[in-house]
Structure formats: C-alpha cells, structure tokens
Length: 484
Image (tube, rainbow, N blue to C red; front, side, top):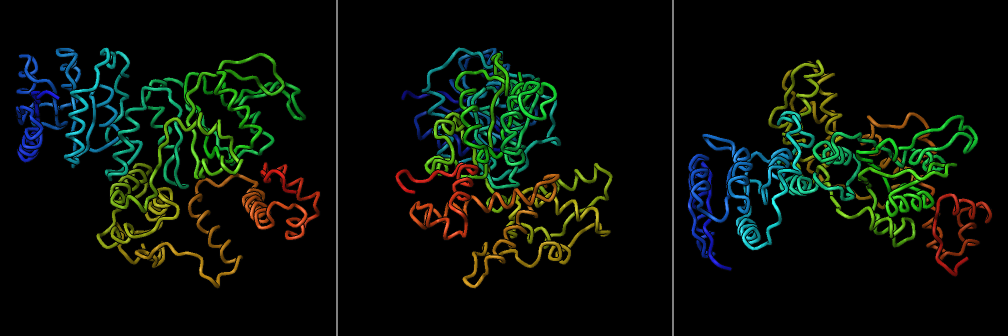
C-alpha cells in the first residue's frame, strides 16, 4: 500500500517514539505531539491521513476531539488508545466514531495491523454520529463490568462494537461469571436502552410453564389460566429479552422460540392472533450447546440463530489480576449501603488472587459482604481470609480421588453449587431441581453403557421399562436411532 501521513497525540514520549519507529518501518510518515491542541490544528489545516490519539492528555480528553475531527474531516479515521481500560471508555470511543479502540499496554503488531486496516478498508458513509446514542450519564464509578485484564479488554472491545446493533448474542460462562451483567451492559448502552430489559431463567421455570412464561396465555388456555397473561416477549417489546440458561429449555419450547426468531411474530398459548416480536434476544448458558446439538439435546438450527456473536466470559481464576479492582468495588458498594469501611492487607489480597474461586465473581462478592458485616477490624488480614475460604489457595483444582465415594463426590459438587448460588437460590423446588439435574446424565450414561438398549438400561437402573421410556420422553433424551 502507499505511504500515509499519520498524526499521533500522546503525552507519553516513549509511546510516541515507539510508534514513530514502528510505523516508519512500514513506510509511513509520522507526526507526533503531546497535546490535543496541536493535533486539532494539524487536522484543521488538512494534514494527515489517519489519527492515533490517547484519551487522557494535558489539555483535553481525546474522546472529546473525535466528533470535531469527524465533522471537520469526515473521511479521516481515528484510532483511540487508553490506559483507562474500562467498558465505558471502549463504548464512548465507538459511539463517537473511532475506527478502533486499543487498551494500553497494547501489542505493537496489533496496532500496526489496525493502522493498515484503517488505511485500506473501504470507507462507508459517515453515519455513526447520527446513530450514536448520547452519553448515558454513566461515570467511571458506576461501571457495569470491572476488570483491566487482557481477557476483559477483549470483551469490552467486542461489546462496544455490538452496542448499536440488534445482533443476537450468546454469552458462555461458568455460574457466577457475570453473564447477566454483560447482557444488561449490551442493553443499557445500546440503541434499545429506552426500552425494557426483561430476563427469564430457563432453569428456574417449570418445563410445562415455559411457553406460557415466554409467549403469554389466554384466559382458559389451560387449567388455572383465569385471565390473559402477558409473556416475556411481549413485555420486552422495544427492548431486550435475556434468556438465561438457554440450555435448560425443553425441545418443544425450542421449536416455538426458533419460529419466533425466524418469522418475527408469535401467538400466546391458546391464542390465534399473531403478535409482532420486537425485542433483541440475548441468551446465556454454562453448557456446551454445540455438543448438546450434536447429541440431539438442543436444536442445531436454533443454536445457529442464537449464536450469531458468541462471547465467552472467563472464570475468575483466569483473570486473577482483576481481583484487587473487584474487591475495592465491592467494598465501596457495601460502604454505600451503610456498612463500615474495610480493606485487605497485602497477604490477604495475595491469598485471594491464588484461590480457585469455584463460584467466580459471585463468590467473591459474597465473601466481601461477609467480611464487611461480620468483622470489626478495618484492615482484614490473612488469618481471617483463611478462616473464611480454607487453606486451599495456590493448589490446583482437585480431581475426584480414586477412593472417593459417589456420595462424597455429590456432596463436594453440591457445596460448590451452594457457594456459587448462595444469593440466588430458588424460593422452592430445589429438591426436584437437583434430582432432575442428576437424573438426566444418569439415564443418558446408562443408555450409552448398554448401547441404547432400553431393556438392558432399565435393568441396570432397576426401573420398569415403561418407567424408563416415560422418563426418556419427559427429559427429552434422544436415543440412538435403531436401538431399543
């Protein structure tokens, strides 16, 4: 490609030097400055083909320059760099029309590649400013997501690109990683922010009521339907519908959901008049939906409809560098709620960073709330943390010992479950829900062990054959074709 003139504004002399050398080796001419005023003067004078600007500069915020540059030079692309690595920084840069946002410290090769793309990709009509939403009134102290790790930076960049679209998003992550927070951020900073955010957890709704919950029902549609009820799709009109734990949705409800996504309309249970579906759909799961689709447990066509943009949230153990920021954030929250000011000493914080966190961010938040409520000391030390979490930090996640009994294994997993869901346990029905979670894999593994022979599987399980067939139907278990 032909050489270009690149304008760089950054108050860090070292960064200016590194970028000048790297882009010069690509054949480009580079002009650098440490302030926004000089950059703006160059732009007004018609200099340069591309701008690279820092956010925080001595005389002006680089984000505030973007709309002026785009108005003065509509065809000029702008790359934003920032050490204030937050979701709001990424969102504001994208909203105001930046070509790309790169957190500091950045990968030099990636920046060079972004520059080449900015100089070569076809330019579209400058409509971003018209589509861009006004500032949402958020501040750095009201961040929906916390973390400056590389894993979180990539999530921020993806979210910033998705804010002003209606694309379906599938959020993957272990329990407690913040899947609903990501869905809310997509809504609260997106073009549907004025509409409602409606969430439904598929695992918490009885299977026979899921279709009524999603699509509503008419009076008399079934026993107990004493009046018309509005479903979540209708409640989310103009906004966002968040389908949490989508992997727990029964196959028959999956079929209806697919039809809504394909046709853009639905009918209530017992109704005949089509209702237009006008909601952005965001789904989340801790399961491997692709594997479930291969097993016939999740509709493959629905998977591809929902999985337009997949986002994987890392478990806390993969972003332990974010723990100090999260701890400070949660302590600030409980202080605002009236609890005493607290902090951790260095040893306590190091212990938290080496803990394996089976309950992820939710478990950390619950710990901080306990510390603030139960302990009198202002600075909490290692001894208290060890007492709360046990002396397991720094150890690898243990496997199941060969001598561990089935009861011990179940108890261990249930302890992790209660730790992760201590603030979101269902009001009732936990016994049946746990049995349901155990029953499906038990029957599936028994069928696999008997090559799909239901007579042998029933014998292995100690069940009547008809009882096994009934459970296979109730649990939507797919038996290999041709096997009995």
